Image (cartoon, rainbow, N blue to C red; front, side):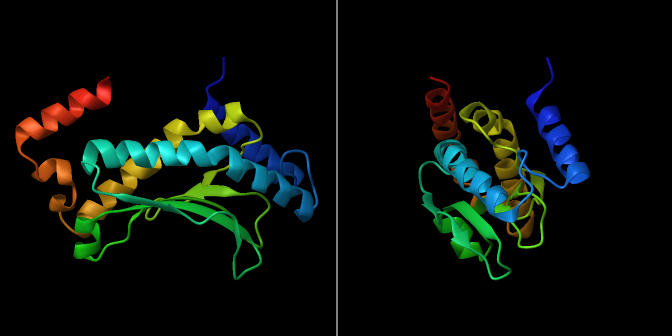
Length: 174
């Protein structure tokens, strides 16, 4: 069995070779695939940011999402962002999971605030679920990079009393 991330990369490289996305060659059809991908991906993006909020930010974060929107370059994007008081006070960006299809791109990508460009090949609910590990990696890497831009104290669980972290960890594994 081929791992999902390998399948995603193969699809991505075949798209580049063929000038297609999901079997479609026209921009209009590719955008229709992207719109569906955003709908399928949304619950998984929210799940990942909720996990980070619960376990690392001790439920102090606020999740927002944009929905699908047109970008200045004629592309499309949708994003899910997690902000929290310490991050805002430090003046750094929130953790963002973004699906985007740039105006001049052949196919869409996933990205974060500081982590960029993972192929987005989601055509089914199974494909979307297979992105969980990628979304977790993007969110984790973003938080890691934001800590380096600010300070470890932007992570609520690190500042909390050790007993609080242990109790929070136990709750997260139930």
